[in-house]
Image (tube, rainbow, N blue to C red):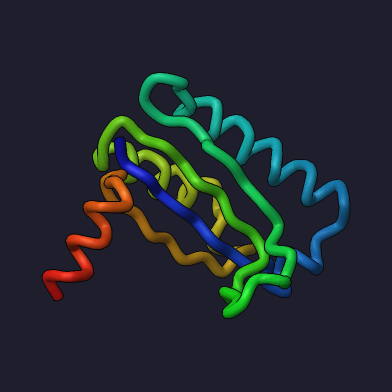
Length: 112
C-alpha cells in the first residue's frame, strides 16, 4: 500500500470566486474524483481542516490522505488535479511513500 498526502491553502483567486463559481469548479473536481476512486486501488483514507492546535504546526489549512494500491496511482491523481485547474486556486504540496511499520520507520531513521 502507498500513502499519498496532499496539503494546501486557498489562493486569493479562490477567495475571489462567487459561490456559484466555486460550486461549478467543485462539480468538476467531483467528476474527476469519481474517475480515480476505487475502493481496492485508490481511495481517500481521510481529510481534515488543520485546527491549528498542533505544535509545530504545518502551514497548510487542508489535508487529504489517500491510500493507493501502489505509487502508479499518484500520476492519475496529480494529472487530474492539474487538469481541473486546482493549482490556479490552491497552493499545494504533496508527500508520499510506501506504508511501513513503526519499527521499519525507526530502522530507517537509525540508518541515517
